[in-house]
Length: 117
Image (cartoon, rainbow, N blue to C red; front, side):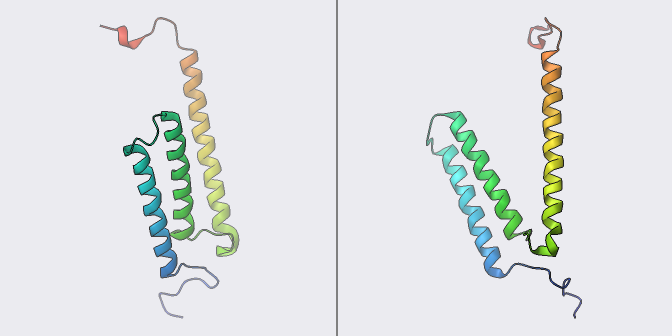
């Protein structure tokens, strides 16, 4: 076993996997760019939802093709750690949004900053 060999049983991507991931990423980026710059639809909520969906797909492409996080890699521990991280991020984001909404709704009336001298 040489110094460059990895842990036994680890699944790593081939050149084909990297090229597929690269082209999928380029296509997803180009579609997102085209949606925004091409004035495909004039509905901002529709464009926003499509951009977020394409971003989510691109994150999955990066995780699978470049980070090699699969159910079989390292007996599933990388997938478990990714899911745990995502749960923590969702909890932190949801908590932050809840606190900001609570502070906004409980702000004293007459505190409009735009009317200050």
